[in-house]
Length: 296
Image 1 (tube, rainbow, N blue to C red):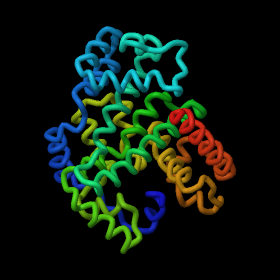
Image 2 (cartoon, rainbow, N blue to C red):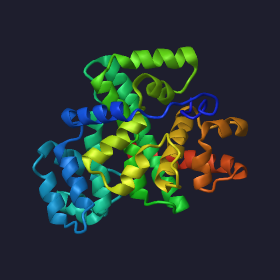
Image 3 (cartoon, helix red, strand yellow):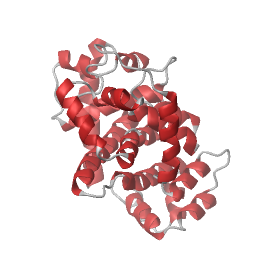
């Protein structure tokens, strides 16, 4: 079910700033992102981003370096030669691509649970996040509305708020699921009623505390219509639905599609009703192709 399906028909409370501030403060204590990922983000978004500084930040963690090199050498990137060092990875892929690889490797740890039930739902969130990131990169490239690498990063992170809430209060997931099943409301609506904020609110606030670049931070709260158009947020909002459609078989009737997507996001990207079916089919096809490339 799309997170936007019922939002027009119920009262959604405004976020509780006090509750949100307290929760985002706890995020700092969770250390949810590895130090090396923070360092890569900091360097790659500075005015000067020398490859040597990126390399120095990564090589201090052997396990991280190994994962990064393995991904850089995957068929997805199709490099002319095997990459044998972090320096080569930066040289061939570019700083933003290395940043995205670092985010992919580092963010996965957020989706590992302490027991089978936690791991199962968090693996589902991880798979959806990766699919959303791939779809977002394609939409950003085809629409030229935002930087494709930035779109990939925000798509990859857009459910991290869920994992943070799950880490703080893992038993509450069952409460949320029960309310969703009983009332038929979207998950994020139940979250706001229960806690005073939803996972998008928490992620946006956490991004501020983590010092994320402005362009990334603006795109994180994909559930909320911005006062002025933010293409990156619109792309991620749409991409999350595309990922859901692709997982459920990839075909939907046009009358069903209209209820799945947030109107504000479609309007911001200038996707009309007449174009929606073709757009969805193309996006799902592009996502499926990208999944095949990663798997090969």
